[in-house]
Amino acid sequence: MSSNAPPPKKSWSWRSQAFRGVVYQIIAIMLIGSVVWFLAHNTLVNMRIRGIQSGFDFLTQSAGFDIGESLYPFDSDESYFRAFLVGISNTLRVALIGIFLATVLGTLLGVGRFSRNALVRGLCLCYVEFFRNIPVLLQLLLWYVVLTEVFPASSEAWQVGWFYLSKGGLNYPIPVWATGQLWAAYGLLGGLVVAWLYRRWAHQRFEATGQPRSMFWLPLLILLLCSLAGWALGGAPTELNHPVKGEFSIEYGGALTPEFLAVLLGLTLYTASFIAEVVRGGIASVARGQGEAASALGLNQVQTMRLVMLPQALRVIIPPLTNQYLNLTKNSSLAVAIGYPDVVSIANTALNQTGRAVECISLVMLVYLVTSLGTSFLMGWYNSRAAIKER
Image (cartoon, rainbow, N blue to C red):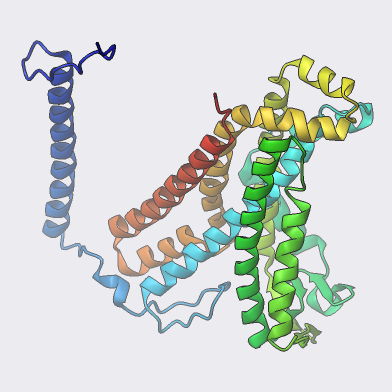
């Protein structure tokens, strides 16, 4: 006789709580949809009465303005759509680099709060309390003033090797594009696959034998070797485009503008203070006996933190860490205050020239919505991977 109970029968009666729940949800969705339709229809009617044009057809028109900073060339004769793409790329550049730098700095500060050295603990505490209690907009303005007022003019730029730092930003040499760079990119992609396969194999071996293997340095070495191999197969080009100090500006090479540096510094230092508290709280949530057991096994403080405390703290760290990533991305919209051409700045310019306020604001909202949902999805996937698996 089977011990499995038969599945419950679905009831379509109003007495069924599940059925009533479905009906209530359908009604709620219909009400929300009706409200959204009414607001959109009413807005379009009022705009038509006042002679205000609407629609996204302006995206194909010539923008008629230049953009001071772009990852790829942009001309004023190009369309508004391409201008929005420039703004999106500038926003993503700040967000991605800022997330990486803030994570590294915040993790070091959070771990530093548990240092046995009182000076290190005090410095980490002072950093956190200082930066997280000053509004991020003021920090952006502060860094912009420092970069544009304190640093010397381009004709008297500070030089360190091939790098120049001045009011015009940071200038640095860049490789002259050749086949070798393309092959290096192919090698890097291949290295990612090999490193992933190695980490999977190393994890399986650890589960089977209990013997730990390098999960960071060796995969990093694999990436570097594969990239160098591709670069060598492509002819090993070494020519660089060096910046040259001119009479009024620094020419050639690559450049990071003071606006970009101010936004990156402000968002990184501000968000790192919150990430430090997230990391500190996650480590503090791990039972003290775990650290004592690691010490009894002969692990030093660094090994205990890296192999015992941080892996267990991840399940507490990741959810609030996701919030800080989202905050950094959304706070990048404040870059418009110092003239950085992000998607908000481009939208403001397009709005003033075309009068399509609803459309421009909708595009900005869509960009941040998609970016935030993408970040949440990736961090949710990582959280599920880092969660403790019950056997």
